[in-house]
Image 1: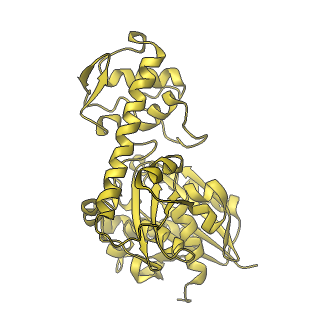
Image 2: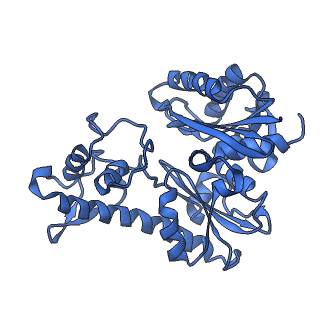
Image 3: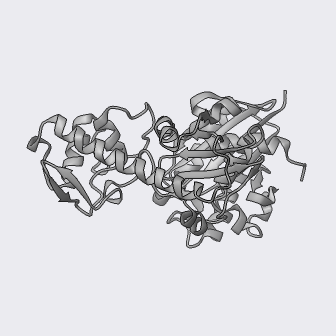
Length: 339
């Protein structure tokens, strides 16, 4: 049995996935708010290593180099690579289109390593899918990555280029601030400006709607209070200067539904922008991944495309989908030439 483990070091979560003989067999994630310090990452590596077991080879990708713990992307790449090396020995570092490089080459390849996890997901999907649009809705961001003739066909290679091309949308299922979803919202028959404060998150929106997947929200709430629907209604009410008692539950559900629709439109607008280049076949499917995979069927309907799930291509079920870049790196590093 040949086993490999892929690691995705994000700013908010460490994700890992185990592959055996070309299929994902296990995956998991642990919250690691790096902006609060790196201790949580050290602990998460130890816990996930114990959970997933030993492997012949490890691969690492990342996006956490952007966090406030580091003064620059380069410093972040080098710092996170060092932590990975302490826990994994000599893992291979995913450097985007350049493939895998030695962990000791982190500084040399920092520009390619930084936030390249999206490419890993698309590259892994392209192993079995000739054409498609990978849609990975995470906790914080959404990736839209075309696969054309079995190759990753991204226009942007860095965050700036991807944002401009519609291939990266800074909206996610749980961690997006409600104040970032819109400037105003309809409530009680009038448009109401939003409080420009972090009073509520997209996870609160989903809790009010009752469709937040189990275990999807691993972060603390905006006010430090509990994650009940009632507490989420109170946080959402604060966004428009009100208290939860100012309206019945149905009123807050309507408001939450509007915010959810706004988020869906942002993702669809980005998809339509990217698809307007005309390089993806009309019949190419949408490939759904991420914590927000539940949104994919409606997005596929609006784009008039069939739907394929990332986990159907890789194995591993829903957890592999949530940990798509880690799952992708696990599959890719097993096929990579020895360094």
